[in-house]
Structure formats: C-alpha cells, structure tokens
Image 1 (cartoon, rainbow, N blue to C red):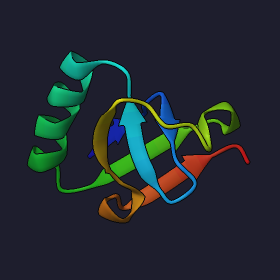
Image 2 (image 1 turned 90 degrees about the vertical axis):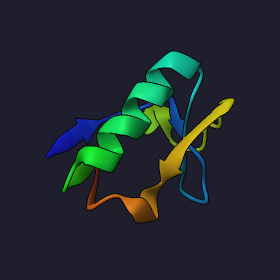
Image 3 (image 1 turned 30 degrees about the vertical axis):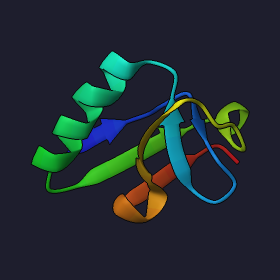
Image 4 (image 1 turned 120 degrees about the vertical axis):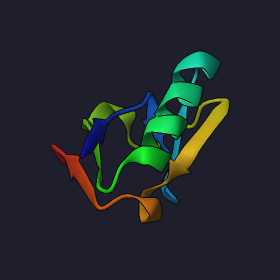
Length: 66
C-alpha cells in the first residue's frame, strides 16, 4: 500500500508537484503498488504545479480534511 501526497490537485483531479525528482520517485512507487492512497489537506485543492504525477481516478482512495 502506497500512501502519498503532493503539492496540489487540480479541480479536475490531476495530481501535480513542483519537484521533478520527487515526482519521478512517486511514479515508480505508484507502478509497484497494489493500492494507492492519496492524502491531501484543503490547502492543496485547486492548485496545479509543473509536474503531473497521476489522476485521482488512478488511486484507490482520496483522503482529505474537506
């Protein structure tokens, strides 16, 4: 099970970050994981950054405080 977060998630569900290195590591971990749990507090909702990680449709769960 891979629990992860990022800098932002757009209103249409695109999970993004501002670090190329961290995004690359997360992509590998996403590929190797059977379950993917995205965690995000409300301050990250509606934000978009340079590097696309995945879409919320590609996760098994989306945990937020909103």
